[in-house]
Each structure stands twice: as structure tokens, then as C-alpha cells.
Length: 128
Image (cartoon, rainbow, N blue to C red; front, side, top):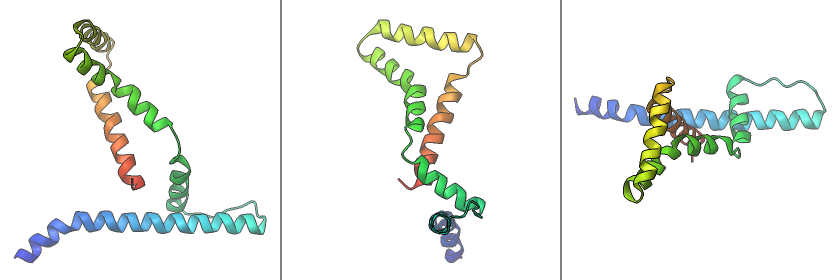
């Protein structure tokens, strides 16, 4: 009975480790195929979706766009915190901003949650 519990608890961890190993292997295979195509001078490249995604994620790893979006979409939280602690007029400005978003149909709370979850997901997926 305890063994089934342990297996049930360990399965998500082993699944993550297995998926990580597969992504790493796909990346290595994809990079080898790219290098071989460069050496051969061929214009065609036969890669699986997993290989292409792994190689593409490596190239996008140095991109600043993800961090820029995350900082931009969560800035209002830090400004509100600053306003609550030090400057009441800043807090009123954040309230005005949130009221504007609500009036125009923008669910800023949901949008902020999505951006943060995406950023965390990318960090975990990339193995940082």
C-alpha cells in the first residue's frame, strides 16, 4: 500500500525528469543535424518538431522580450506597493489606472497572472 503512495507521489517528478531528458536529447540531435547540413552544404534539413522546438528555444534563450513583457505587465504591482508605503498620490494614480483598465474591458488581474505564469513556465521549461 505504501509503495503505491510513493509511486503516485514520485510519478510527477519522474515525468518532469523524463521530459527534460527528452528535450535535451532532441536539442542535441537537432544541433547535430544542423551542423551536418552546414558541413554537407545542403539546403534541406529534416528535423522533428521536438528537435526544432528545442533548438529554437535555445536560440530564444538570450531574448530580452520575455523579461520586458513580464516587467512591463507587472510594473503596476510594484508601483502600487511603493504608493501604499511611501506616496499616497502614487497609489491614487494606480487606482485610476486600474479603473481605466476595468472601464475599457481589460482584466488586468487576469492578464498579470497569465504573464507571470508564462514567465515562470518558460524559466522551468528552459531549465533555469
